Image (cartoon, rainbow, N blue to C red; front, side, top):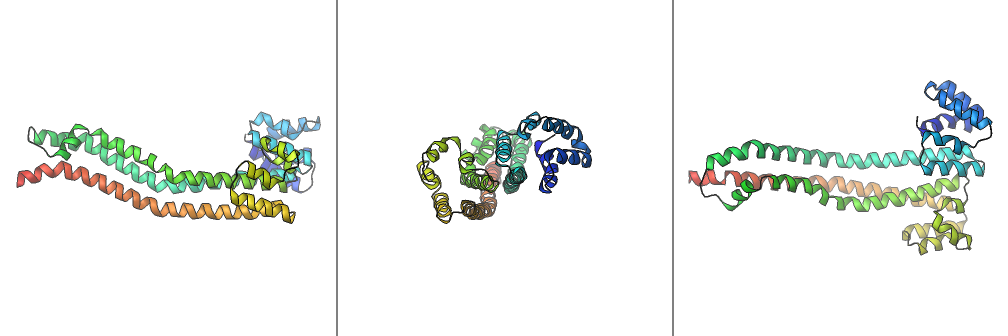
Length: 289
């Protein structure tokens, strides 16, 4: 069973201010699928074990374990679980949006590959027998001598499209880092415990958070919003505004990709198939002439 499913069942009872042991008991009674696991964790909790240690049998991610551990230390477990679930949902939404963007291009490329395989397996061998020893145009000779080069070309074309998604990956990384930091701060976790380990030394020496971001060459807009949060004394609010802008940039970029990719694919498919068809039937036109 997933640790996230258990936490989703626990959250309503923890938000109702029930003790963790009772929350586990009630969640197990309401959901038979997690009853056995909830009972085992409840026994460990009553023996004094922290929840972060009890969840290790469910093979959660290190990020989730550290999140729960910091939330227990700050005394705000329900807020920490809620923030972790929000972050998980946000990442799933970003993944779903990315896959929906790729669905149409991949279907078009699959159709192209099927068409080329049919040409190579049936049409090209038949035309080779038909033309025999006749002098062929250069384009027909290339198609006959290297039939599988067309499939390799169409298969490698998606690799050239990866350049479209490199900026998208950077946008998603900035968005996730900003969202994760904001949720940790709102869950009551200190800034020292929320940042990566490499940054903690500088913060412990008294460096401002915005200066640390500049030293590690983070996004200039993120640095600007962090400086704004330090000035106003409300860093989570400033991070929330930065997160909103990052999310808008991501949606706009995906919209541009969804607009450009179909046209690029149609031009590529039309050019490739058109070249193949012309090359295969050019000798027939010479025969008729």
